[in-house]
Length: 269
Image 1 (spheres, rainbow, N blue to C red):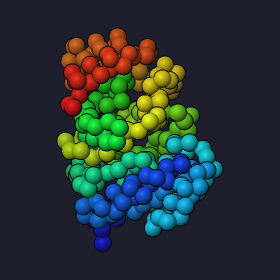
Image 2: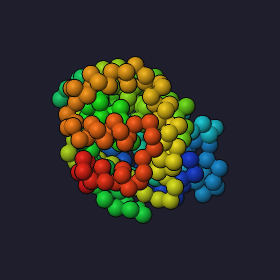
Image 3: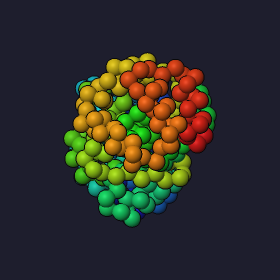
Image 4: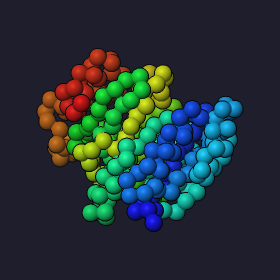
């Protein structure tokens, strides 16, 4: 029996037939055995994608196109394992990812989610690490990343992914909701996510909508943002980092050169 039988991997797919097989294969190749896997077809219209989904050896849940948040929620709802990880159909997990991500959750029941280092492949290569997680940092920057292993109880407590964030930041909103409710996250110092950089992927497209999407975050989590002075005092972020968050990564959009410089300064590359 797989040591990851208590994990479901949810793979949302919309017209990504050319890559969904690679995503599923990366889950089947996990050290210690494969997790349960469910692919959610979010109303794909591409014939090649529909054929690719038919060839998969794992369950496929089909729904009318409703966006990434709704697809992830459908995947969560279709199974009952205590742990869940969402992996988009164009990405992969490295072989040891689930073992690494499960360790902090097994060690501490108060930890609701875990995440690690992101490694880019495809049109761009490099590693993206993040500083230590604290609530203050999360008010200004998404320092967790899009993929983490979560407890099902956390997903239920948060109310799932919010379909209102259809064009981006649905994961940032989800993690903020978890922190708002007192859940803790843990970072592991291993590469646990392989992010395919290609064309106009969702996360990079969301940068052009930064003002609107970030405004939605601040409005939805207004009570948490109102505590930013208190949270800053408890934060591990140093003075210079706090000033960058406050003045450059607040409600205003950030020039790309400034964001890249700040990443080099504060995030391990």
